[in-house]
Length: 394
View 1 (cartoon, helix red, strand yellow):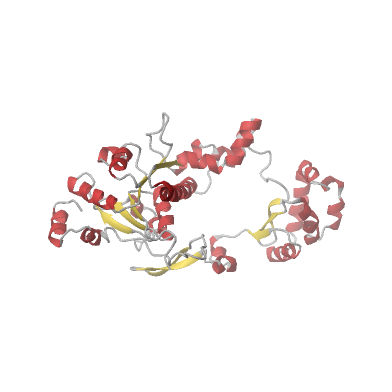
View 2: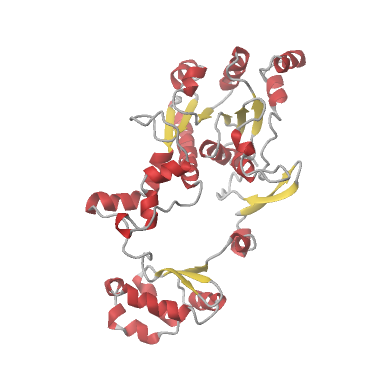
């Protein structure tokens, strides 16, 4: 059964992570994504995090399910090929520095004038306007500029060094918003018949990710938190052999937490009677909970918490995730048949659609794997293709 984006053709000029993961999300849902790469070494992501056997988890993760063609975009012959491909495409996606596509002759005004139904999608570091619009920027810079590193450390008053989030966090969040914007523009085109220019940035995406924290600051002038825990009952604690996370955020869960921990006196303790009491006396409550959790293994605590309907879970590492029955039951990890390395495990498609389920995950393409087939489909002959290769166009 065809995926929900079956029939949508995407011409992908993106590099690194922000753009490629967005187009991977589209490919996962059935779009035909053709990745345009440089001749020679191809997109730089192919050379990042390479393992001794040549496998790049970086490139494989962010380019699976795509087609690959190689072009020297500075050559007029290559530009003719791009225009021919765009005439058959629904979406152009790029994450060059602002101005690069204009210099190549494929900026939004030029493309929209010739192909008004095409959705033109651009991703950048800092956004399309402002004094920094044309500056280069990557994930780490966006985490820094957006305030996330200071927030992660606890705020300006914490005295702790800035603390970045997960490497690639800004790229990943921006990619998801990028794919979201592209699908929204495609839906709008179905209604009005017109393509449009959508733009996302690493900076804007990281601000959206911190929406609640930034809104709090804009209202109160306060950033950060006094303690590393958000709340004594919304945190994680070390058991005798591991860690347990709890999220008894609803006040109605407090009696269940006390029962699960076999601390009946705690429920009636005036210091912790209500949410505000537990917040005012957080340090005392955390000490009690730390001492209690340390007395038994994590599995025992989890069983007791589940029995009392307290939201909880183990603090897993990736080894545990690879064997987690909940993860496996939902297909959040899957396998892919790699042409050179056999069957590989990777992350699955996290969106389930009952009527248009996506096809199985496919591997990332070899460099230029689909160049000849793409040109043949455009009407080029084998003799013309060979001449383009000799001339360094493809």
